[in-house]
Length: 379
Image 1: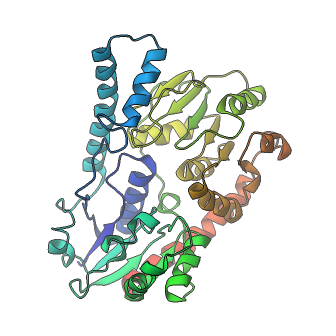
Image 2: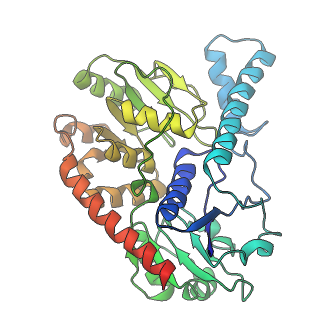
């Protein structure tokens, strides 16, 4: 049987990135294909990339430990390294267990394995974001060195705008794709700008796959509000947002999940912080929460998936596009805000999302997405 390769952001210690890769892999297996996640890891990638052994994130972390009256510097560093090493190890074990991985390759060795695959699927995740557009990797721009089929599944361009200096090269690369799909309107506009072509908008892979057999997370026996925050604080403060949620849902514990590549610091608004959950435990925390507060794209999708009332927000420009699209696509605009005043104005804590309608939208999108994959791989 011909083998399909998936080329995506599978390697970072990020829950959404890992789970979307596994979801696409397992969806293709369910469709009857032999699949591998191409284990491409850029040469400049480091698991401590943003924390940095001497970087700003480490300084933030140490300052937070100062506030906990841990005065011994060696003890602070030991605590920090413990959490960092634990989460990185858990992600590595999870990938090895759940991904069908190729041999590890980088920019120099990727070409040596490309023709092991009759088709390569690029995506999902933000593989076409501006930081990737000068690299050939996620645009499969390998001149004539790859002979198989080129497909994209639900990549996100982050923004629709394209620099003129990149336009010609991107036009050549995307014109050579056999099938293109994206995951939102602004990515469709990006493709249209580059090759003047409307393409299909499909569901994120995490909506295609059930994730039925997941490991149970720790400390989820009782009711709790779950927070999963990756970026900047909401306008008006997290404390006020959590206060409003608790006024509605009761004075129950607030749990916070962190990842080392993002907002790795103690959450002053949380009763308990989880630094080293594996992806199954992350899913379990979402599945069992009473309410979810997040600025994460996949945080919203898993809230919808498990019918959880939620409050999502964005403050940064680069996060805005994906949340605006989510609001429009699933009819959840009122539950996605930019500041504290929107919570009361939208009365979002008083009315539950219409999960029956949302399920119907997802089912239709899932059906068309599976048809896209089947057609792209069979023709």
